View 1 (cartoon, rainbow, N blue to C red):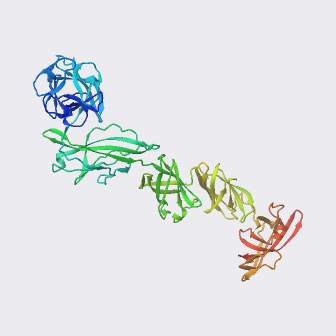
View 2 (cartoon, one colour; view 1 turned 90 degrees about the vertical axis):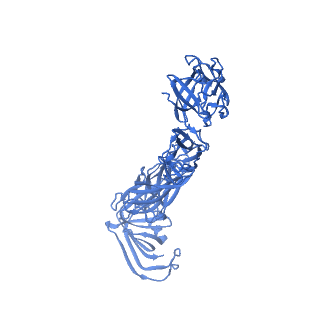
View 3 (cartoon, rainbow, N blue to C red; view 1 turned 45 degrees about the horizontal axis):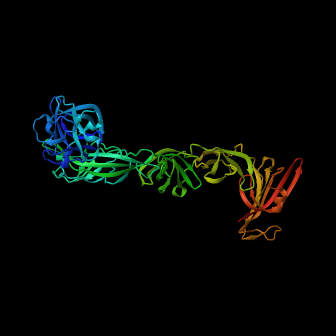
Length: 603
């Protein structure tokens, strides 16, 4: 890259954090030129000016003296010093561009060799760091050219330093221009460095600011930050001001990469000014600010559970706890959430339970197939904030379970039930919902007892959790009143874990009742079977007539007679507590007609 007149630091290619320096910042003739750690003083800054074709002068910015070869001696080891201008060859230099560049503090710098015109070619002897050492005060001399790093320098453009310029203070982050400064903020596409200043010149039209920064990140699985990156170049800051407060108008990126829980930004800001055509800068203020990882979350599905509507929330924050706060749960114009619900979890997916008690109504899976969810997001590093809406979230997990109903009635309980099988593999827990009522799944068998429709169409829904922690569920459909799984209407009795049923005679629903009234507490102690006391008893009879099944497998007609007291279900679905008054039956060919008389009891 082309070399132009300007103010530079001569950074050594042995170690670019060290540069050519006038010993002790002296302004005296003969003061030594040495290698020293960079300190941003004018003792380390040199005005390089082309005086003729291939000839340059090098003048120290502080002393205004010329870089000079002692005595103009063309010999290895001759010292390089500063001296007043004398127009001799000892103060004439040849800057030879290698064609290579080196990035120093974010700036791409030409790498050069600086030859001395103590010889006519200006290239036999060159500026050299003695013995290629990198300790402070190492001497700089001339030596026969040997193309080593001890003879190579990166020219870093710079400006003059003015210690009297006001120093910025109170550096911090802001979420927006005009925002309040903080040390830590959740990461965002853009965060806005801000600072306070004292305007020693009256207004900002006479001076400005420059900023530079470097970053490091802390991995999810570590408590120790990584190494700092390189400094960015000093950049003129376009600022928005309010009084003595300034914000970097364009901001800088606060986005934290996936796999890291935070990013530190080492920010420095310094004042600048141009006086008499000369550029100056003041002392920099430095601070370490932190951007915290913000997970990307999405709600993939929702499902009804026995106590809550559960949301499946995916998160990119694998190394810590994701916190969410659900603020709205609605479908169309119907809002179901009465109050916000907070939850947290680890891993790629967390399940957020919105308790049914926090809802104004429970979304019916048979009519509501999707929900809109609004939530705030945070982590274990900061409280949930912001507002994110997930629209048309499937109400029912994507991986729906299959529900199969067997035609076998289970008469060991009343009311009679069908056995529902959940086809999802290894289940930890689960439920079948019939018209909103939850029936728990028997994990051992993979089945749940589902109430028998008894001539009424019922909607079925399944939900649960597998052993691996994943969820399943979804709306299954409706079992109609005439579904093929529905057995023929019948009379049924249940007592002490046993059951008995009669098919309806000749296809007719035969249940006759004769209710004569209600009396006060009625004691059945006079009966020859186990005493039962009821708060009241319906005085009258209930009669049932039907055809005896060959073998119910759970109870016999004689056991029903001896039981005397049972729960009765009529073919219409009506159910009642009864005392058995008597049984009559007659057989004709292969069919036995049975009549049972009962007294209805009200507990």
